[in-house]
Image (cartoon, rainbow, N blue to C red; front, side, top):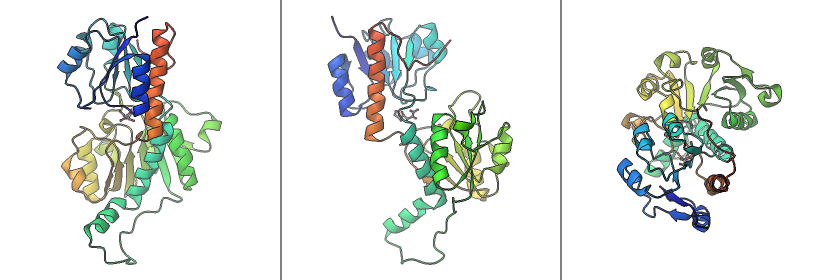
Length: 322
Ligand code: 8YV
């Protein structure tokens, strides 16, 4: 039996590429340069599935131009806002994603952002690297304590809950808003706010953990920022499109927001120069899931799902569409 053919648009961890080459005819991308839409369409000719990442924007237009050989799109991500699901549905494409396996790594990275922003880690590191550090001073780079503060979590899915679990260890008080209230065993004492405005009013720290959808896009804008306590700290390891960056920058400049910890940006890979130059920003280049263990598990999960699909079974991690 001939092996199905998979077009893989980016480099993946070694073990994942090896398994892809074993189980499939895998068209890899050794240069790791993202493909343009035209390249992606051209390279898809004859492929049975595409294994893509966030850097591939699968618009309706692109999906309509994919060859009929393509039966499935597997995305190396838990988010799928880069795929036009309606167009995929119309073409009867299976869309496979990676829920679950990146929860812990992303929650760890969120705490890194939270602590980095609160404790002015970026300023401290720059001072040290510049060679200008004069030795410890009692008033140098004083940050904000996290202990005893209220952490507002917007979106209490898997990652939001894993962040809450870690933040409890830092003695933070957890508040959240979610489409549905969690059962008590998953809430674990966190305070549910049915109205998001009420969550914002109590969030000394606000961390975003919802998917990017037409409803959540631009969620954190000037009017919602105004509801936060003065000198709040904002964390985002979800999607850059959730925040109106110009409004965030204005609040960072005025001091309404004391600091931000960001892993994601409105217009990746372009990062607003103001964010890069402000001292009170702790910035990472979309590293949320970037551990060997997690990135390998993401790849293996996609292969398990593709194997099921090509064996005529129902893959476990299909995005529900239509
Ligand atoms: C990506 C992410 O998976 O899963 C997501 O939705 O945002 C990331 O963890 C990662 O950037 C690899 O493409």
